[in-house]
Length: 91
Ligand code: FES
Figure (cartoon, rainbow, N blue to C red):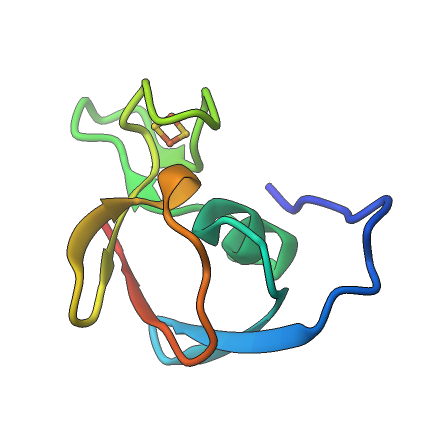
């Protein structure tokens, strides 16, 4: 899954890393938006064996967007603000 930005594209740029790869994002993005708009594709594997997961509810309820952020531990990507320099691993 790749999100496409349709509006609000003039915010300052930030950069984070997913699995060591640079991801371009914008200040004010949630981590989920930053990763999916940056081409992450997916955030984790389903523990029930049905493949890649990339968030579902986008509001902190489904727990489908867990990632691990250096210095923060396991967080919901949809409920975490993206910050410049974040180092993220798939959850
Ligand atoms: S997308 Fe549902 S909790 Fe994050």
